[in-house]
Image 1 (cartoon, one colour):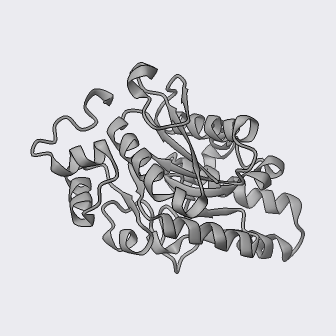
Image 2 (cartoon, one colour):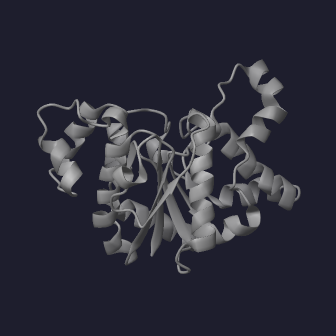
Amino acid sequence: MIGHLIYTYDRIDDARIQQEISSTQYSGYFGDVHIVHAYNGEMSPGKVSYLEDKLLTMPNRGHYQGAVDLINAGLAYFSANGPGDIRYVVVTAADTWALDGEFLANTVAEMEANVQVLATSSWMSRPSEPPKGFALDFFVIDLEWNRTAALFPLDYEKFFREHSDAMALLYLPPYVEYALQYRYHKHFLDTEKDNGVFIRRNQSLRRIVEREPACMRDNKLALAATGIYHSHLVNEKQAVLRGMGMDFGEHSRKLKNAESLGYYNAAGG
């Protein structure tokens, strides 16, 4: 079994389609999938709930902090209340679809074989460069490792409170991705010595270079290599569904066949 955490503020139709993808594409590789949907928008839970096994709702504290709150709450739920046989959790923002169950299964298998604890991509740099932020719109984490390493809960407020001068000097935006990369590297600085810091840090990461830089939207090369597709534009997502010729469920079918797209994610639903 694998856990799947989907988080969103207002992209409800994106989240519904990702739930359909997860339900139909992952279970064949993992036996079962336990879906948690973390939501901080304005719709009532009764209107939000769809295929998830657990819906978590909370107030929205802003774009970046709100996203961190959702991820923290979802992973805390898996650690405390999720099925006991879940070791790996895949986390996706609702507007980033993970369409290929085989790529996900291969990623988890690599993590198991190589004792890797995190799979993610550089947010702002290409494979030949050092990472610039770790993507949070798609990542896989070893839940057992996280229980001791405490990568999550991620303290976004503390990171920028302590490093705001450096961020200002480098003219960097307040991306959550920088906080995650810092916290990951800091874990190995605190637990390893000398060359062991970067050796264990690099060994423990499955860097998903196939979609870098992960911030790039409508990346067809990444889609072909990984099945991961990130876009905010409904017409681009409709084209992907039509191109794949796949029917994941009610909401993917509706988008694929729609002539008018104004309904999609409208007013959070």
